[in-house]
Every structure is written in C-alpha cells, then in structure tokens.
Image (cartoon, rainbow, N blue to C red; front, side):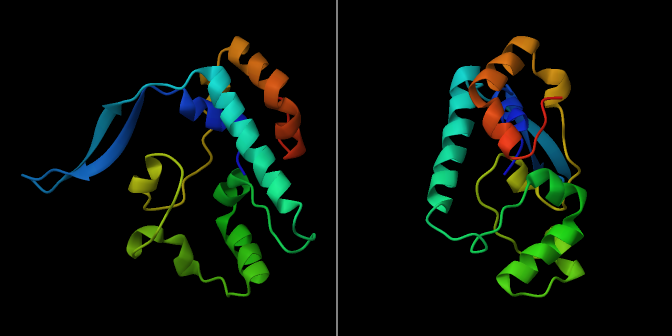
Length: 155
C-alpha cells in the first residue's frame, strides 16, 4: 500500500519523465512527456475504491495468509522489508535483491518510474508541497479515514 496523498499527487502531474538511450550518441538522457492530469476527485475515488476492493478481497483469507507492505516502509528500509517478505513467502533474502538494475526484472503497475527502475529510491513526499489545501481537504473528507487505517497520519 501507499499513502493516498502521494498517489493523488502523482495522478495530478502534467508530465512524466523516462530515461532513454540517445540513439545517435548512446548516452542516457531524461525525456519529459506531457500527460493529461486526472481530475482530483476522480483520482481520490480511484485510490479509495481500489484499496477498498483490496481490503474486501483480503477478507476471504485468514490473518497470516497475506502480508501487507507499506511502500514507504519498503523505501526506507528495504533490507528489513524484503527479509520480512522472504520469511513470509519462504525464500531467503539476499543483498543482491536490492540491486535491481543489475539483472532482468519484471515490475508491474505504477508509473513511469517502473521503466527507469535501477535502484530502490528514497520516499518521495512531494505531495506535502504540491497539493493545495482544497485538494488535501477533499482527500481527507473522501479517503482520509482509509488512509489513517493504513497508518498514515493527517500531517
């Protein structure tokens, strides 16, 4: 799971960047692409409803049959979180798992960063400065309770 405010911030962006290799020079460069931002209320509903569906789905399983991982916890301490996932899924954690740019990997979902993924990045909290008070208020009203349920405070 991920803090809904960070997801909302991502939905509202007007551009995204992908690192590509310049065909003539072979040098890596960042290319910005325009995108149509999602309307805030639609983005909030999408995050809230997707997570509610996930919680409903998980009700079919007994406690201990699934593991929840917060994106921010993974970014802050990937060793600990991968070891926890390994313990749950019965595989041994190896340091090489953290070096995702050194081997073929398969990442699904997310945003353009999945294309650029070479390492586990620090937590981004751009939402704190990018989201205007009106949008934050809309988020709190429509999805704040669920966000708090996941352990994210309002500050």
